[in-house]
Image 1 (cartoon, rainbow, N blue to C red):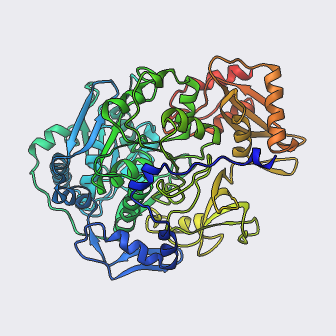
Image 2: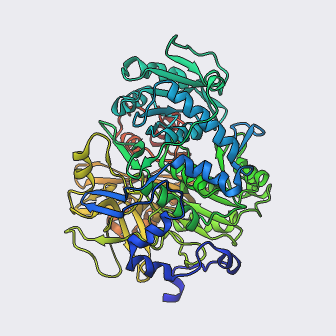
Image 3: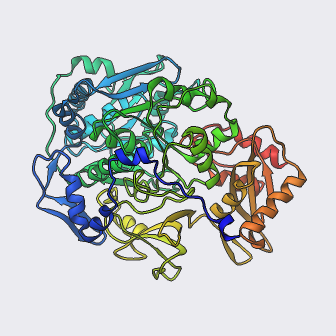
Length: 640
């Protein structure tokens, strides 16, 4: 019987393993014995104007990596690649919202655009250390603006294009940006977000902004404030062609990225230069196995950290061809992703479990129209992937021949922390497997004691790592209290995890996503995993609503496969499924069948909306960042 319930494992395909960028398992032991030396070797693969004096200074919670070293991120991503003979190689392959709308930039062309825009920023008074706010759609001007900032040492703060005027205002004011780079509008899924109009509303209360640069994407007429607003193309036409890269200290700020979903004052996560680039370059090369002839597609929006690390900085610092996609998976048809992969010969596809589950719901017909034989590696990011979705991804997208790297990391960590190495690691569906070499994690119990061997508890990072956040911008006390107060010299992740007998880690979800039902602490992720293991369920989201008797009652929102409809019999089946998987204490009080869930454009489920619907609230707050605000009405109707 034990044999039947054993988790299925997948060995790296022999051909893949033979050619993988990492093929020697001794690297784990080497990194453990001398982890500073390990990271120094990774850093030496980059271009430095001056090598560091010390690899690490660690005075918890203050870390400095590659102390005294001088480098420039844009130089590493562009000039150094041209010097390596990649000048004529495609750096960015841009796919617009409408099929057929595309642009490409070679490394030489991208370097030229970046140098010109760096001079534009200088001409607008931006100096080394001056933050620049960027509020753009997914167009090439976005990475160009980021790299231009990096070239002159101006920290960039990219604000996700779906954020409201209020969100933009708060982020500009927090970092005191001197210049805003935006666009007339942002097409996505056949609709246009009025970015310039949103920006104008935000700019009514942003005293630090002196200049606004407007890229023309949608072609709509927009208001242009005389003396403040200038069009991107006009400024570029006037700009000098050459701009030398600033020699930046390893610990100079590269960017500020405000964490999403937080309440109150925005939380500006600060990433610096040398350590961050070392980690994203190394993890792109080792985890995502990027090689010279790869076409690498990280499907994330650059407004989030995944887009920063694995669409822009990681691929370009490795001299890769990176795909930047403006559209959605379902526009103009459900096969849009497969069309992009087939036409461009994409070899590595890095996506989110929520997107994969959406594909599951559509079925395999859209996939069958396209030749996906160019793919050789698949990845997941953003949330834990349930085993059923992993298996579907492996079988239907990878055709059983592509390894899957299930990666765990955060905005705060900067880069991948726990993940298989695809040429080495035997994978288990749903498990992120082992920490990357040179990364040290553990599991602690509720009393903050380490758990020996297999067990379940709170994930903790026990040693500093190169890509780690250095502070919360202008709020070091909040940085200390949020991440370090509980354990002092160890980073408290706020994610739960389970470690099995092989030392593999499975992330069980945010520990603050915990419901208290009659004294039982139950993670939302546990219940969701139990529900989606039923063959009828594609996706679920679970919340706790107030209950006079139990404290909280479990409410599950469930999306069914294909055209299947909900029924009382199915509700009973699902409740029994949870009871069997977790126990009677985790059995949902209420199951609501819904065609969709309230998600931001990055795929994050907005649980406060679900909670509000379950509590019967009429006012569900700001839903402007939802990818489809009409979902709220569907949810209310489904529950009525």
